[in-house]
Image (cartoon, rainbow, N blue to C red; front, side, top):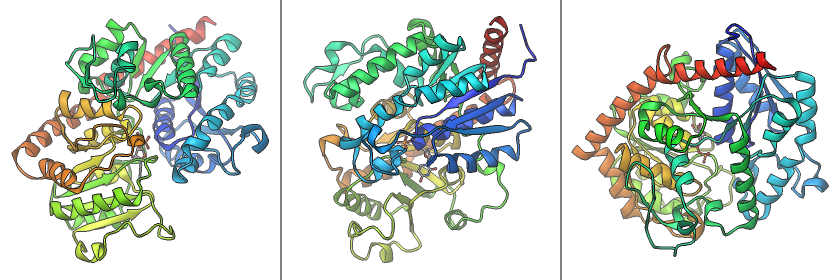
Length: 477
Ligand code: UDP
């Protein structure tokens, strides 16, 4: 075994925050073990990636490089100018019109990625699952392993792999029991990810290619830790027979986003939190893609106000946004001192790690879920789309570290969650014994997460194994 060999890994993240952020953390993890990492991206995404990478490079001896490939021209891609990532699409509510074109545009990147591999001769390609063609590009053309990163946990991946054709077409409101998996989990069709509902031909095709590409790949990198979902990590590997490595939570240790790696926290919201009691503030954020309309935002405002809790609420609407009338009249005056609204982007990991935070109202995106677990914060689960309903089940029914708001179906179906529902779920987590019990359990998991990424921990050793396997592949070539 070629133990000492320095590897060069090429990373190709999908152009959405929830995919890029953890992949950069993974690149940094490789670099912190002395390997070389090169991140491939497009012109408009490069500046923010470079900023993150520059922060990493202060601390890791080995360089992380970025390389730019050009996004297809407007005529080729059928996308408006400036559209090189999902933020562009979701913030303008243009998903229906642009998502298929966006995915098609990414397939046009293949020749450029291949030339780059020709030039860099990396030992391995770590590419997002949304680029199914990259398995063939790496493995067939250059004979190097392609690792997949899809930003999901073992529970969600196990459920998705266990769904049968009949469940996907059963009638909308009807609950079905997921067959085969370790727990009794019920779902409805409208809680499944878009592609699994088999309504959109394009997405069905893409996800079919993704599954096939996964089966041909070297394996999947999971941003999670064994102790959070042990039966599902085992199920995924042993029952389903898939190759996988869990190396997370990547927001711990390797990341530049947590409080451990920073000096003074000078941001307004963190100073504001310093004035609050431990576990007294609920943090509300729906990730980087969810873009609620005015009616839903109003219900959230009312629910928060009547919950009587202190809160930090991240809203993806800017001050200049013409659509500002979602705030109930006098809301900010009435909740002054008790609530803080952040318009735009929040330092989420540092907020969650602040001792004043006692709960997190979240859409259950996998990164957010794991960041809450790592910080020992119980969740109020409000899934919206993708695999978020599955993450909700893990949180509320398997790990029992959160309460459900009670959303019955994906947001595409247009339902609005009412203020009473929101108030009730927030209070379940923030006030009383049930919430305390969830907090106790999630703090135990947070301690396990911290241990998992330390030398000798479960994620640390799995990462060692992964490096070893890439090294032996590379020396056999
Ligand atoms: N995030 C952040 N500030 C924000 C919103 C999101 O730092 O204001 C980060 C968050 O910490 C997480 C990622 O963006 O790492 C969102 O990923 P997630 O999987 O939770 O949701 P998605 O955006 O993919 O729906």
